[in-house]
Image (cartoon, rainbow, N blue to C red; front, side, top):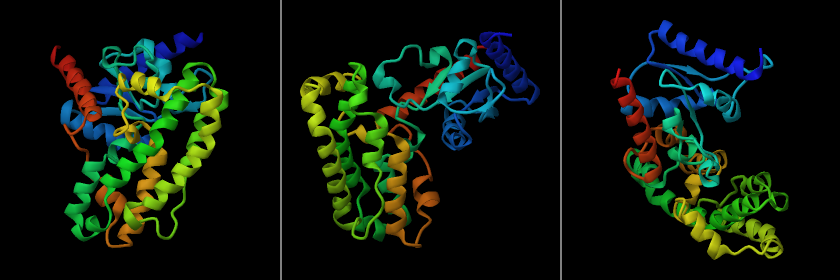
Length: 295
């Protein structure tokens, strides 16, 4: 059996498995951690019981997870077996046929973690839980400044990738530069010292690369603006794992035992209808729901 025959057979198996389990469909996720986000959306916009698959065997028989593995099934998807995946930078790269018409649901942010870090929702939830803590730290201010700092380096990375010069500055390098450990005083002035630290590290690393690559920020910014990337939403399109860990670290130190920040604030809910990226997710699932209703 060749590789394509294998994935077609597995897709057929997953469709049958959903029927046997009395589920609406089988849904291949990238990982078990993704289920909270996707099932929250599903139950609001395409309600029903779903058979969530966190990993499966690849053509070599090795249990495998992740986006690349999910996309191995892309030619054999249907409303009875579809995939839900993080967008990563695929939207900004304009990769084709990654849409609901091809039975692919995506986050429209870098990953599901970004949605839980949406600034207005985060601050509003903190106010509901403990207004005193919310008065001490503004996640809205912090994430606005975070977006401003990472916006140009993100565009530089995408520009270098698009023009075949990624070796000058890689995603791994960028991720490493923004990985920061909490330090005493980081909560002061809405995280100003964190922002200053990130800005210094990014400016020092990118300055010579911008010159060497003849990077035209204004032109590149206009191009990526046309794809929906702006200075105020850059944090939603940057690597979610980095963002989530940073917000969690700040939140835990802010709460200092008064609240379970991760469970009571960060993961408490989603801001439905509140910003374009979540609305795009909702639209996809409503379209998917209509496909089930058509039979």
